[in-house]
Length: 377
Image (cartoon, rainbow, N blue to C red; front, top):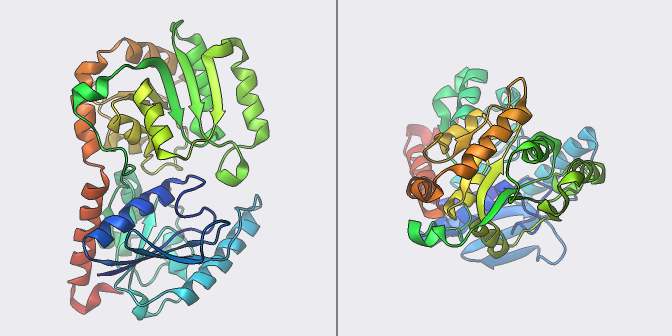
């Protein structure tokens, strides 16, 4: 097959500035190329990266763009300009996979391939404007359900395909994953209000965990999806009473460094409050792949891989007192037998390796191309 990936306009590929979808596609493209498929990856132009290059069997084309504007109107205008430039550069293909919500709204010639939008955030009805779609790919089961409900005419084209964990995060045997772990509650991701980090700091401060530490790793800059300098200052002020038990070291985009973070922490907490913002967060899965025990909020998306008491813990973020709910669950998770849970945790993570997810994508693409009439409608 000839597969074209069109990335969104604001983060580079490879994921030098992070980005969940950028990490996902940076892993899937080479996996497909290794299986003999022709892969072209279109992304934003970025300092230090050539406009065109071949890497790991993937042809990279980089299109002029810029950092994400803070204004929503300018954000969409910048995305539209990027999509128009990208469309002009696209090669003939069988499959056109994109996470841009605007690109599938543009007139796209048949020669560019069957259009497969990947939906990684809760849909807001925009997909009703899509006309010529091969498959709508929901990143989790809740996203797929919402797509089918909002656009009934496309319900039979909706499939669920998760993203993979990083290529360097292959789950080891349980005995090796146990290792020597610190009494650390780790969070990795954007430092943004929707992630519930203020709630986590308050709950950690209330929990009876005197010899534990809390570590929040991720970007706070608005251009990287964070909440900005003001939000960082708010988190630091909220955690002032914790002293050296709280660390906010900034972002880490190096996979080896993140692997080390995951391997050292006993617990990984992802307390997201984004009821309609999360698809299938990969950071908890990456931590699970390295043997950390996950503790997540009650968002539906986490049900794809966290089974309470077996592969992790869930707290009720909708409770009347969510700080108390999370504080209680932190104490419970800290007291759990992590070694007994790790085999199930690691088995779950193995379903989300690059090879496993890449194979599922290819099955969907092959079925689409086998449909009568080429499956474009």
